[in-house]
Length: 599
Image 1 (cartoon, rainbow, N blue to C red):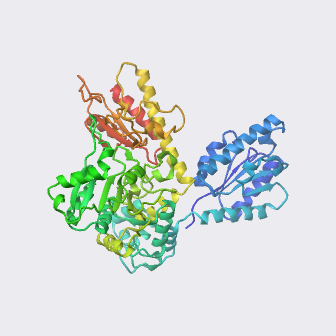
Image 2: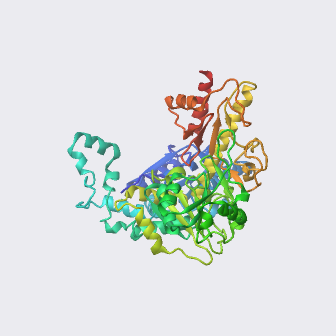
Image 3: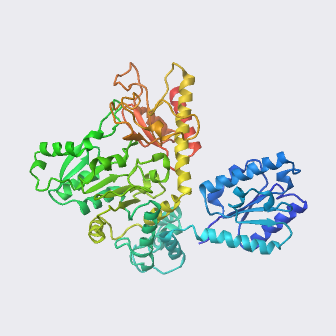
């Protein structure tokens, strides 16, 4: 399949009739004659706006002629180089590999500082080589870059869908053909498109590998994802993290085992307790007066306190083996409260066989230093001596996976390896023999998107947008003075610029803003991208005001005006700043909230 990724030329003379303009247009025509698309732009004023387009381009060609550098005075040269440097830095912040070329008549590498030179793929001098030769050289690099983008399974699926093979296997729509035989089927086909339907195949297609036994391109993509997420193993799951949780439990837990469980666990963990016949001992989190569920107190993780809970438990006290087989913690909570995993590992030591972190809401944290140790598995994290570490993640919630896309990450300990044969029996128990291949491909692509530096840039942008939204809401509140406005739950003080410091978001003992009382400083943190908006009517002390606006009324109004939130409580509603959120979206929300107040 041919994807549209033009070569972008940025030259003030692109449409001029002088020698420089004729030269660059000749190069552009030569590139187009070779079958590549060219996008020519003449504005050199704000190169950073073009750097934002790196995800849509196959190469950049940037002019450094007199029109951009002026008459060559030191001041003009420094100003031009500053723009070029900013352009290159912003591209490389997001994309380490896309080809960048400089183009000019008189200037050479002697005029360009080393920090810019080392990021370039080449230097083009006008009228030296023929446009046709230069075009072929640039196209070779652009195609090499494009060929490197697709991760293993997605590459194989695209190849299969475009290969034109006749389908004699299920699904019964046979690459979408069945839909063409019915009027409503025609509508379905036109809505979803040829590619999705041609890529909807079954496990009879050997060249795509097998999800159930982790072979072929599926296995290659899972290994690639494990590398990107700094795990020893990664297993894609096509029916959500509810299923991932049950897979982990059926691998780790036997009937009669004592299991230590976050009382704020997902329903799927309760199902796993029932199915495995385990004896649950619950750790109880705090809750504030807004109804937001907070952290489990750090003292509850101490082995001596867990032993006390076991001895007080009517069934656990009589268990044959009183060593817990698994600890399952919701990391992070729906509302964004995270735990310091290294502190939990240090407190528990080797007391529990397996540590399972349900990170349905936290797959992004591994890709930015902002989150520190507030996630299960990461680069340069020490291996526990005995416990295995599992992280179950919803790729579809915070990353770019399709709905139900999930994955299981495993970090082996110093003394224990994952028994892959036994694990795969648990995996098979909960997997469909007809997985949706588009979901597998989205797991593959979502992981590739998070490979640094691109993944780091995506997370930083979502953090920045979330914090900018909070700043905007505070500014509106200040302008209203004594009049009411919506609050955003979070620390009272945040940095004025950028994403600031992780320390701004750490929960500290008895800070009024979080309402969880005497927490252990450094044990928990609020994820800034999870924003709980408080409506008037209830304060942090639990006192009701004389008047108020229940959140359900606000969210109903917002929905009628095209703004859909994640969830609503009594006097709060919740939104998330995923990697897909834009300035336009959150500014529209601020404007819509102004309309709520006005109406």
